[in-house]
Image 1 (spheres, rainbow over the protein chains, first blue to last red):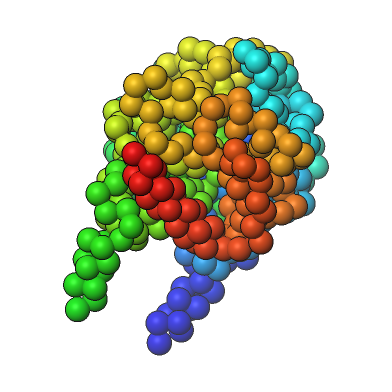
Image 2 (image 1 turned 45 degrees about the vertical axis):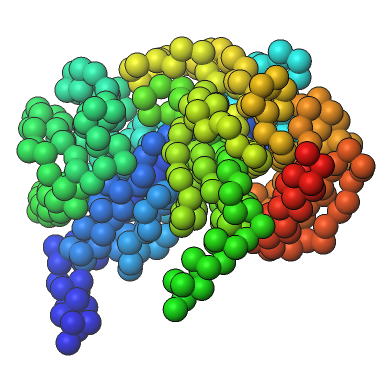
Length: 234
Length: 234
């Protein structure tokens, strides 16, 4: 009966027939076989978004770095480790109707990670050279063919949140940005709450601090509404 | 009845009355508020060693970085994040009869991690400067006053395992080194098995590949024997 209810809901939701991709979690960028650069993203917000989109009937491709939380049920899970692997997985998942980039992708990687563990030498410290990682959000936002109808990015900021995130939306060419303040004092990175500002072409709206699940549900509703509006305007 | 049996064993083991410290897990070295350098240590081997020492009756201080596995029951857990924090916790735990350094401590840290998240600039990649971290194993091995009777290190190698580990024992001044091959192909880092060579002043003995719990039990027995021998020679 419960299964029937769920199946019924999934075949009835406003996102039935829509294919959506969600990226989530951190990426890990190797330095050598044992060391890597990581970030404090738990994957909790991206996982909640994928679950909420699925609950509205969407077919969800969930591309996730090494996250601390389990992926949701009922989605196609594509595990990756590095930013370059994530980009390849995103391109392979197209076409989609909407794409939500919730992963905390490393901006740069170490050039030529070594095959052998770096040895500690007398007083020696490594001279790591970095290269910029692919900018997945910008690339997908600017696709000439096959751009998703709705591209949503996240901006994790520690200062001047609205200003930085508004500039990011324009710079990347995405439709919406969900901005949040990840200063350590907020407890958001790794916690179960989030304080979001949604930035669109019409401006910014700030949501009250709420559970990441509630952020996800609100975002999924807005995505469903936006895709419905786009269908009507076709 | 079971509790009584355990209590009885703990008050009877060969390490009753002995205080032992065990370090475990990776350390995380911050780059900025969201990024850090990590390593693939799960903390599984150190946790197993602490549990095995406890099972032989020792009072165990368990100093652990951010590990993937839970700390054992019945030990004093001291959670740390960076190598510098780990060193301070080790010094604070002295005096101990034996010390087992199973943590995968980062050899270096980023000088002056920033308070604000590093921004991605046009084509810009960071120019991170590194400093050597404290060498906890070497420092404790060379204490003039309060050196533990037995100091045991680990050597995670990806090549020339016995040669590198034998040199490491001399260079650090510790009594024993447990050397293992952490090449990705072995599956040891993050896995539940280990292939150990125990290196002492009398030479190296190579153990068959076995569960990390069995490595821990064998090591704990050898530590108990060594401390008993030392007591007799007093």
